[in-house]
Image (cartoon, rainbow, N blue to C red):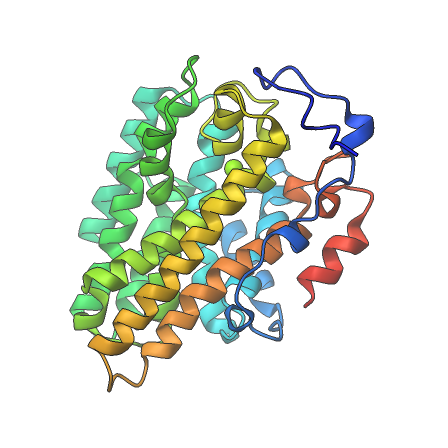
Length: 354
Ligand SMILES: [Mg+2]
C-alpha cells in the first residue's frame, strides 16, 4: 500500500494534506535514535524550579499569573532533562541561563518590540556582560543578566572559563537581531543562512559550556580545541533540527519562518520528505559527533574529565529531546507526531521519564 502522504506534494506550508491519514503517523521516539550511552538513566529532583521562580518574582521579570509565568512553568523542566546529573545548585544556575535566552526569545516572538528597540536592549545587555555593572534604571531583564554574570564570575575556576561563558553569551546576543530580521521576513530564507544563524541562536553551545563550567572543569586546551568546538557545534545543530521538527506544527501557523521543516516544504518537499531528510541530517550529525569523540580521545588520552565533558554535551541533546516530548510547549490537538498530541500526554511522559 502506498503511503498516503507520498501522493500529497505540498508546495506551500499553508496547503495542508489530508490529516485524516496522517494523525499519529509518526513516532519521534521510534524514528530518532541516539546511541544508548547518550542517555542518563534518572532525573534529578526539582527544588531548583522554585528557587528560579522566586528569583524571577524578585527581579520583576514577571508577576504571579501573567503569561510569562506559563512560559516559565513550561520551560523550567528543561534543565533537569538536559543536565540530569546536576545538583540543585548547578541546575539553578543552568535554569537561569536557559530562561535568560528564552526571555529574550519571548520578547521577539510574543512582544511587538521594534528592531531598533531590540538593538538597544541587546547593546545594554552586552554592556552588563562586559562590565558587570547594572544601568542606573535597571529593567527586570537587566537584573537577570547581572545576576547570571555574577554567578558565572563567582563560580569560575579560572578567568579562562569565565571569559569563555561570557563570550558565548555575547555571541548569542549578537545573532539576535539577525534572527529577528529573518523571522520577520516575508520571503522564505535559504536553508544555509538559517543553518548558520540557528546553530548559534539555539544557544546550545552556551548551554553545554554553562553545564561544564558549573561542574568546575577548567581545561583550556580541550575547550579551545577545534574538534571540541566542532562537537559542541554539531550538538547545537542536532538540537536545532530536533526543535524544528517538534515546533514545526506550532510555528507553521506564524508568519515568517526560520524552521527547516517549513523551508524544506516550501522548497517542494512533502512534510514526510522534509521530516525524513531532517532525521537523516540528525543521523549524520550523530555519526560526526562519534568521529569527533574518537579524535578527542586520541588527542587527549590522559584527560580524566574528557568522557564526562563529552557526556555533558550528549545528555544536553537527548535531554532537550526528551523534554520537548513532555512539554506542553509543542503540543497540538492533531499533531502528525504521536508524542506531541495534546490529548496523548501519557505517551510523551513515558519517554520523558525514561
Ligand atoms: Mg522552534
